[in-house]
Length: 81
Image 1 (cartoon, rainbow, N blue to C red):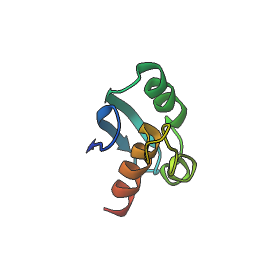
Image 2 (spheres, one colour; image 1 turned 45 degrees about the vertical axis):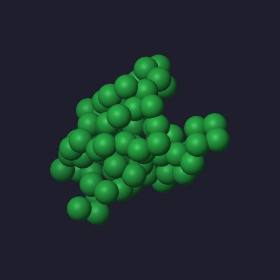
Image 3 (tube, rainbow, N blue to C red; image 1 turned 90 degrees about the vertical axis):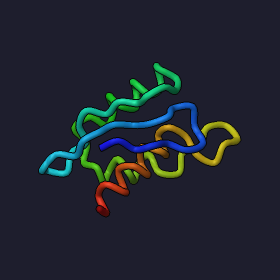
Image 4 (cartoon, rainbow, N blue to C red; image 1 turned 180 degrees about the vertical axis):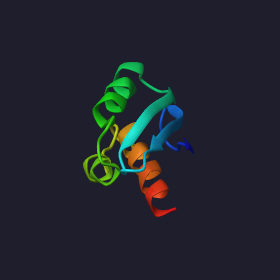
């Protein structure tokens, strides 16, 4: 799945949720490379619903969202699809 982000430096996030509900193959397009690689590595193999709980609502400075929050939105959308 590819999610087009909004309000952050990254332009999109690609990811998969496997048959067991685990997050796989997270890749951010753009954004702060070290941070996005770190977030992607941390959620790899994590239950998607747990990742949403942990990441949802994280802000980037004064912005109302962040790359982790956008990933939470993407995962939440995929889970509800």
